[in-house]
Figure 1 (tube, rainbow, N blue to C red):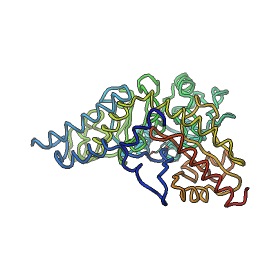
Figure 2: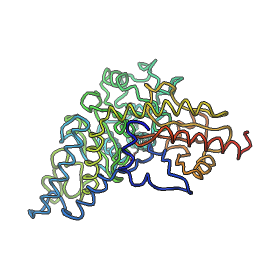
Figure 3: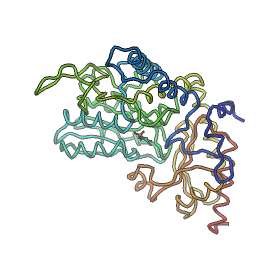
Figure 4: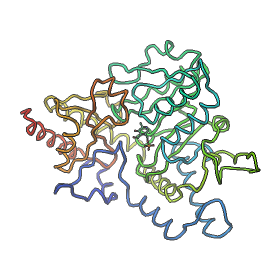
Amino acid sequence: MSELGHLRADFPILRREINGAPLVYLDSAATTQKPQPVLDAMDEYYANHNANVHRGAHTLAAEATERYEDARSRIASFVDTASAQIAFTRGATAAINVIAYGWGLNHLREGDRIVVSVSEHHANLVPWQMISRYTGAELIYLELDDEFIIDTSNLEAVIDDRVRIVAFGGMSNVTGALGPVDALVDAAHSVGAITVLDGAQLVPHAPVSADDLGVDYMVFSAHKMLGPTGIGALWGKPERLEELEPLEGGGEMINIVERYHSTWAPVPHKFEAGTPPIAEAIGFGAAVDYLGRVGMEAVAAHEREITAYALERLSEVPDLTIYGPKDVTKRGGAVSFSLGDIHPHDLATIVDQDGVAIRAGHHCARPLMQYLQVPATARASFYLYNLREEVDVLVGALMKARKVFGLG
Ligand SMILES: Cc1ncc(COP(=O)(O)O)c(C=O)c1O
C-alpha cells in the first residue's frame, strides 16, 4: 500500500461495494470524494451555528460569519495569498464567468483578441465565446504540441498586441497535460494582455502559490479538492479585483443603495451577492485543512507515482491508446484513453460491473475531441486515496472488456 493508503479510512464512501465488488473510484477529475472531517464540519455548522452571515447582531450570526470568514482565510493561506484576494463563487465555471463578463464586457471591443487553448474545458471556452459575441473581440486558439501540451514554440505569432486576454488551464482534465504557465504569462504580459488561469485541475493536485504564478486571475472549485459542490473561488491580483465589475447584483455586495444607483462593497464582498453557500464555505475550509495536513507535496508525489504506474500498466493492454504526455513531470493524474473501437461509454459500463468508476465522453472539451479526432475518450483520474492495486483492477476489467468485444 502506498504511503497515503491509510487515508482511505477517512472516506466513508470508499467502503462501498458496487455490483458486489469494492468501489474503485477513478473519477476524481469530475469530482472527488469527501473525507469525514469535511462532512463533520458542515454538519457541525448546521447543528450548532446555523444563521445568515454578515447581517444581524445575534450570537449565531456572529458565529456563522466568523466561521465563513475563517474558511476564506484558510483557503487563502492554502494558495498562499491574502484573504481579500479570495472571492467565493458557485464554482470554477461561475468564477470564469465573473471574469469574462466583469472584465471582458468592460475592456474588450472589436479588433481585440482573446486567446484560449484548444484543450480548454468548456468552462474556460464558452464564456469567452459569449464575450466575443457581445464585444466583437476575436477568439484565437493555441494548438498543442506532440506531447498534448499547449504549444509555446511560436507564441509571438499568436500573442501579439491585439491580444487583451489569455485564458488557459493549469492542467487539462482530459490529457492531464500541465499548462505552460510561465511561457504564457510572459508572452501575455509582454503585449500588455492579462492572464486567466483555470486552476480547477491544478490547485487540487499540486502546491500552488497564487501570488508567485504571475497570472492576473485564477479560479478553482472546492468539489475537486475534497470539498462540497456549489462553491469555488475566484482569486485575483488586488488591482485586478478592483477593476473587475461584479456580475451579480443584490444584497451583501453593496455599499450604498439609492433609488437609481448603488455603489459596491469592497473586494471580495462585491462578488458575493445574496446569501452565500455558508456550510459549503466551511466544508471547503475543512477540505483545505485536510489537504494541508497531508501536505500538497505528498499529494503530488503520490499522484505522480500512481500515474506512472497507470501509464505503465495501461500500455500493456493491447489496442489501448493514451491521449496525454507520457512523462509524469509534465502531467497530472487524469489519463484519457481509447481501447480499439470499443465506444468509451460501453467501456465505462463494462468496467462498472467490476466496481470501477471511470468517465467516458467528451469531458466538456469538444474542441479537444475534434483535435484528437475522436468522438469521446474513457478517462481514469487519480487522487490521494487511490492505490496501485486499483490500477490493477482497472486493467483487469479492461482485459475483460476486450474479450466481451471480441478483441481477444
Ligand atoms: C479544467 C476544468 N475547468 C473547469 C471546470 C469546471 O468546474 P466546475 O464544474 O466545478 O465549475 C472543470 C470541471 O470539470 C475542469 O475540469
